[in-house]
Length: 282
Image 1 (tube, rainbow, N blue to C red):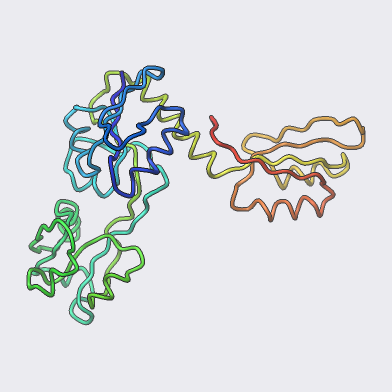
Image 2: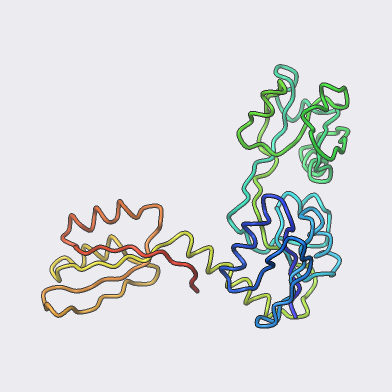
């Protein structure tokens, strides 16, 4: 039986659960549930704090789990990233009062407050910078004003919170993070079921990036039409009752749907339909 850790709360929790449901797995109905058995798939889910998931995976308590890349790197656990999941994106940056620090090298000999001490310490070491990393559990923006640190390292989205605290980001991002599927460094008890989980997640990821496009086109314009929608392998072309027309079906990138429809219409395609894909196997 495959044991999978899922975030029990926070911004990663609901998207992770929705993705697993799309993969065909049972998920908890009540937030009070800490463990859920899915006998149909021979899988057991454990709902844990996102920050703890990498530790449990690394220790072998669970086989794999979903957490943030930043949390994985900050855990120091014997676990590794297996698959990026495309949600929960964030950027990790340094910040300090405007005019005090211009680049990462300027942090040498200074104090840096963060909720991710291992991640930050490893990054500074890789840059040849020796600084004192001050661990805080939250609200690191106040650390400088309270005299605890000279700079901070934290997740930045819009930067509004930092600006409100009189801080300005500097240097390159330490990390671009997102939700990831992680696994133990050692072999799993059931590698086959883990491969199934991976394929299902990949199928949902691909399905979110593509749509299915169907259209009718005159035979004389087939080559031009299929050059617009080549599909992943090759489009499906089927004869119609009218021998001068054929029906074409292909997967196309979801972000360019309308542009492709415009191009198809220009070459003579009609009855152009778009269908969302919920899951697939590539």
